[in-house]
Image (cartoon, rainbow over all chains, first blue to last red; front, side, top):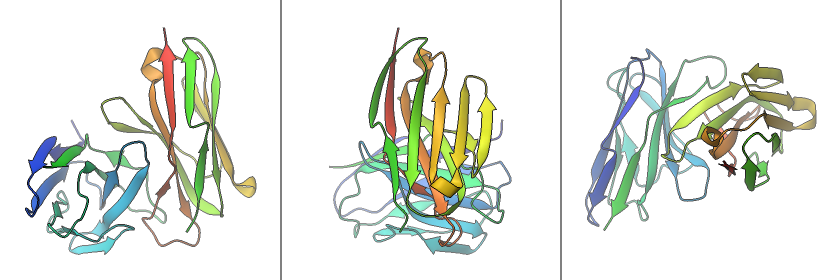
Length: 114
Length: 111
């Protein structure tokens, strides 16, 4: 079935460690996105990519890094520079149109910093 | 940046009841989407509706872009409708890809 796969679903990290969250899609979408969700709040955009080998910072990119080497994959690294990394991370994809296309989301990854 | 305000913040419904959720936004938009997040965190796109009216089963949505609001209607609610409903908009003045999410409406449907 077509969809977006995020892994791991749950991740625990010690302070000072970098972690990488995986996002893979088989929807043949050009555009991919990473959002962060904190309890009781909406989603905030971290990074997004319209095409392979190109990506842009969203509203809260500090302390995060991404790569887009393949159309299907858009991994997110949470670095030790991110001061408050405990959150729910959501990956999404869409077709690339004049405006942001209809977003399809993965099931999310919950990161807890111990 | 554009402000997105959703109301009410919380809603408790008895099964079978109808309800209306509202999304106000502070600037002109060229994109508006409604999402449902289930209790396990999965987000599903309900509507892509920058203007006009759409219906999908018991759900329908209307966006009046000139007055800067959108409404999501839930009819004959079911317990599976529980979760958080988000509105997200892309301002006409923003660069591509920047959907701004509201804080959501938490809906609980009781049997």
